[in-house]
Image (cartoon, rainbow, N blue to C red):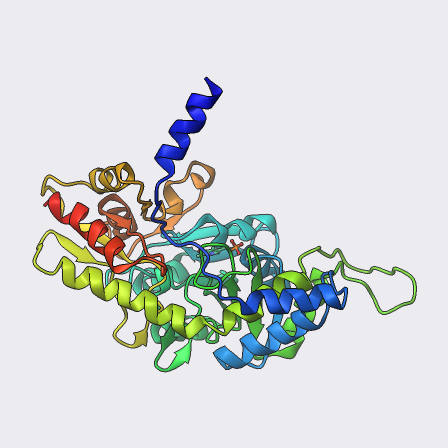
Length: 385
Ligand SMILES: *Cc1c(COP(=O)(O)O)cnc(C)c1O
């Protein structure tokens, strides 16, 4: 029995095409080896400091703090901005739950904002409405979904008018630019993620960036258990164990050397899909922002309503061929855990986030996909229309 199952598994394995899996190059191991050779196998060391400097230099910001996860970075951003119990924080509904969870860690109150059609990101109109309803709101978290920059000029103008800080969740958009400037560098605080499926990975990790050194210094302080300067262990505040390790940072340094190459490959995947589906009027690719240059972390599409093909049908057809795809993030206002939270739409007639979720899905966007893989994926999708 066990042998049979084993055989079946081997047979089923074949070649799997992934949504977005890590792509390593070799330099990662060199930096990790250095960490071992010098015995810097700790949540501090030369790779951590160098990775911060190198990432900050790449995106063109003054300061960075390397952390254990993007989620930890969002948490510390909220903590540093003084968000606390009962404070209202605006966050898009159409995003991964990690954009929002830290708001709840701090006992603050998430209020979800609908998307606009042009970029799928936070709608400036809905945000304006949200400020009318909650003039006391304390912060705004913007996400650049699937790598497409949000309407930053409009969103920043609203935040400035209401004197509220913007936190940029650029977990999915490292390498994307808006009007020539990197996403993650527009807000008072920006965060990146190096989780396994992001455009570059450290196997798990995150970065908090800011133009203000006070902010990143405080992030590093809080991330290392908030130790006061003293010989003994002295604490006047509650800290966290959120620092990135020197081994992990070594992987990040190696990966960062290839970010532009990863971006170019992701863009090529998007263009390939766009051209391949151009003659199918029921298919629309996820939007880009004309004011920006997206990293195209994941290529997504939506299917016209009532055309007889559903995202589930396409995802099933791909799964049968051992090809991974994924639904669009389920809007957070529809999640059972956030059922009590308010949700602000652009207008009463439609919910953009729900519509994108209902009609869309994420295509395999792995940069190791070969021409042949892309042909196969495209063929399976096209056959259904
Ligand atoms: C991946 C992701 C995060 C969380 O990052 P981790 O490093 O996995 O903690 C946050 N927000 C968005 C939009 C993400 O996609």
